[in-house]
Length: 404
Image (cartoon, rainbow, N blue to C red; front, side, top):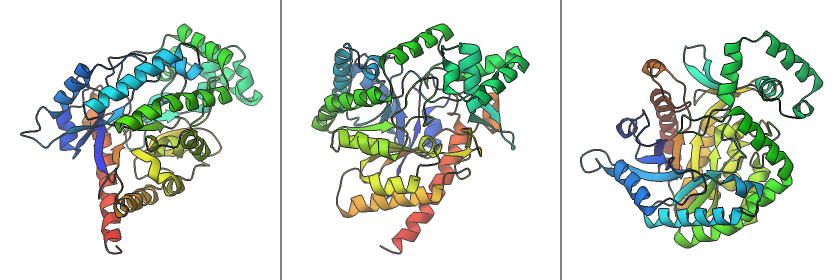
């Protein structure tokens, strides 16, 4: 009763090939049609073409299948609650229908304004010589106040921090400033495009003008009330990804950061089609989140799992991505609760017994240090993570089998 082992694949341009995923032991592929920007319908022909790519060698090699869509992008007009949101909600609905018609039913999405996941350093050196992703609150403040110069940005930070970042900025080299800027303005996963600084600043100001936390929350609930009935009708499972990092930044609100947020989202429309992407890294960066407890209490709504660990730096909001069995996430306890949830589903003859899981992110190591890959998505670091997770899961399942 193992989790379905998957990895994220960014399509034909991804330097990590489908055969690499096979050799890692995956049976599932997590992918998206990144060529389609937010707000456009995914045509059936394009979905079928992606399925054909994934399954092309299934007759002669270990079979692969498109297990999870990550992600259909939610247009910012929906998040901002503009009148134009209605047409973008309709395109989202049609994409759900088109995916279901092609046999793809699990859809991960997020409701983070403007940015996807945010890091201030995508090449943070680890003691073993590998490279990790890192988030430093001081560097976010430095970018916000000294580089971006967002109006009134200083009001979002303590006076002591503002003083420190100006001192750090004045002592930083041009290369250091550029590195911080590039890391934060990095585009969506799966693209090489970055935000242009001034247009990015303008988008932040528009959000500041239009909505705060409560309005963003209501806009999310409205979106769900429109799209979840369509997903339920065609047998799809929507699963929202938590905010990363799980707290406001750059003046942008966050509304998917803790267990109470997840409970409220599930209550907004009670449906088997309204579920969660359980990401241990995103939720794990918030020290208040009880990860095993969230699986215990909300496990029946978990449709997709991201397993990774973070090390939180004491007394700060800083964290870096640890190896999968290191850091502050108790991966053994989390995986044990996931296994128990799968056994519960099996004993009640419920659908979705085996939950698709991917090892999220991974350090750049070994030969990948000499290759260009998408940040967080090199092959060998994720392979190490998947191997470690697979071993933990096997041990837990053997122990559970003795008691069932």
